[in-house]
Image 1 (cartoon, each protein chain N blue to C red):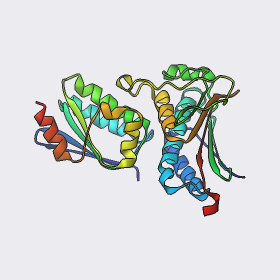
Image 2 (cartoon, one colour; image 1 turned 180 degrees about the vertical axis):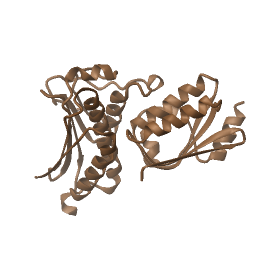
Image 3 (tube, rainbow over the protein chains, first blue to last red; image 1 turned 135 degrees about the vertical axis):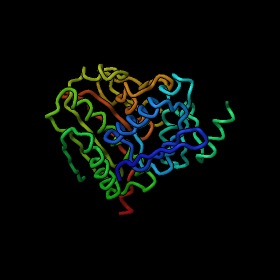
Length: 116
Length: 167
């Protein structure tokens, strides 16, 4: 499977739903979506990766780029992921210390709200 | 010893194909199911790096992969034809350094230019230096990794244990 993207607003936070494979071929589409959301003044994002089957360093780069963009507006980018195969690459690269990684979208939103 | 060789035009879409082929051959070679995700990701990283280097410097040249069943090891070699100094404008990776490491650290002789791999700090990473990022991931994933400069480009050699008795 390649990449399916969607997004919706929940409790004032933009939730990005990602399904499929994020790699050197598909990552530019996710990058474009994140840039588009920020350009439309969405500075608090949750990326739901529960249905992501594959993630490589190009995808990580896109997520880091998105985080940099929202932080420029004092915003946030949290992740939802419980899959060990995906979490492993975050651990290898040390990015578990950079992103908030949660088990559910509701948990990610609650954690973000509690920090405000 | 059985080898599968693949050459592909340096297009991002073909990296997925390379991953699928590598995973299939790894499974056939007796690599444990639990390691197949690591093989898939590491081969994808190596091919992505090679594709980006080729697209910048030699888009007409194919990227080459060798998948070899060594009996008790499964070895993958991804070789590019980009000039050695091409890495400098991708940032983060020393142009002449060869990397030889295992998950436990440096591994001993692996090329004429050896240096421990120093991943770029996570706080400074972004999409501007995927080459170093990808190599850092490979080093974390593969059981045995050697990155070395060749006459024509860069070679990333990775291997994992295989279980010939299980075939």
